[in-house]
Amino acid sequence: MKYISTRGQVAPTGFIDAILMGLADDGGLLVPEQLPQLSEETLKQWQQLSYQELALEVFSLFVNNEIPRADLKKLVDDSYSTFRHEDVTPVHQINEGLYVLELFHGPTFAFKDVALQFLGNLYSYISRKNNSIIHILGATSGDTGASAIEGVRGKEGIRICILHPHQKVSKVQELQMTTVSDTNVLNLSVEGTFDDCQRIIKELFADVDFKHQYHLRAINSINIARILAQTVYYFYAYFQLANKGQAEKISFSVPTGNFGDIFAGYLAQQMGLPIHKLILATNENNILARFVNEGLYQPGDFRGTYSPSMDIQVASNFERYLFYLYGGDAATVTSLMAQFKAEGRIVIPEQLLKRVQADFSAYSVDNEDCLNTIQEYHEKYGYLLDPHTACGVAASDKLAADGEVTVALSTAHPAKFDESIRLRNISQTYPEQIQALFDKPQNQIVVDGTNEEIKKQLLTFF
Ligand SMILES: N[C@@H](CCOP(=O)(O)O)C(=O)O
Image (cartoon, rainbow, N blue to C red; front, side):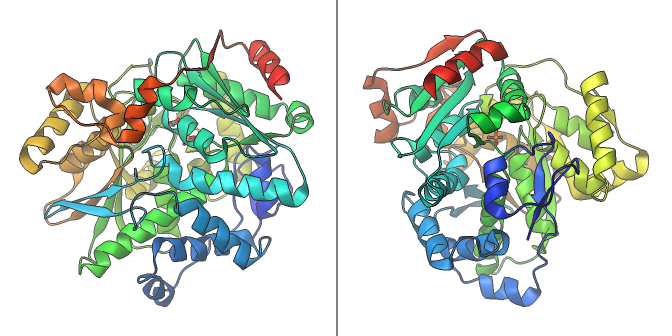
């Protein structure tokens, strides 16, 4: 298995080099040259596996023997030993047609831990094997940052710098990042939005000389390892339902801002997992829902919402989907991305919009609807949804047909977003790990967010 760029200007590369490259050196994103096609028999064999066993099988398909199986097994086992639930990502039934896939049982109470515990251990493994330095640069709207820091804090040979938008993440998200005292961690709080943070890191990664000179590595979902690791829970959730006798027409509803999580579901489906529908849920920052419904990809005005991790206008994984949509035509993807840069929009033709709408259905959930959903599910089922999960559940309520079964991805624990939940007078008890954060001192540097200033901070830190 080799990895190629959506822009076609990078020689096919192996797994470890793809992980280290992060953003492709031609400015595109790496994807597997060919997706493994899983037979019914393989899926049947996988159905009884534990999460860790399943992850090992899935990763083995993509790692190309570059990591001996025993080492890969240890990486997987170590990564998921930090989860508080024995099933790692359990499904919880809410009612006859709706299950919630709880992805928040990792150390930072968000779905990002599933991939970032693994990627943190993988970086550490590569650093030891190659005796190489790993300097991680990432952008976060709240969850990725905390999770990436947790994955590598205190690890030898690794330093991590995370950019977050100043005062635009929840209090718990901010504390999770900024109360970490390990000296290999730097938090930069950028005066701007998450899109500014993401643009800065993409521009720094695109400066290939700078990237190579300072050994810059990515932890965002521009790194293909993130997406591959996230495919595992689609398989696992599907099998959990199948083992309960629920094997027909299973759809997934996915709250998404950067298009990474739902793209992982798309890849699982392309590999042969018989997902019925992929429902894409956005908040009021709804560029992706508008794309699926109208065929126009064009950022709107930034909206601060109750689900801040999805307050994103430019979705970084969208380019990967475009690549598949255009049948792997890297030249067309390159020209569409150039057009997006120049004109700020991409419009796709009618026949491709039909294809998109066969792949996804989409719904944009407004602030009021998000809180109403939290309140309704709390009153009716005694289950507290975090605001991002509430968007996924609201979209499923809107789009799933009667008799269908939907798995809504629960991307975070509600305690991370208490300021939104309290607006409906719902009180909750924080898990002790979260409560303890409020007593710790914070470390962060507020920066104006020019590339030059970020570079200066990085050069001092690295
Ligand atoms: N919602 C994310 C934004 C970054 O997304 P990623 O999947 O590319 O890491 C966050 O919480 O930081």
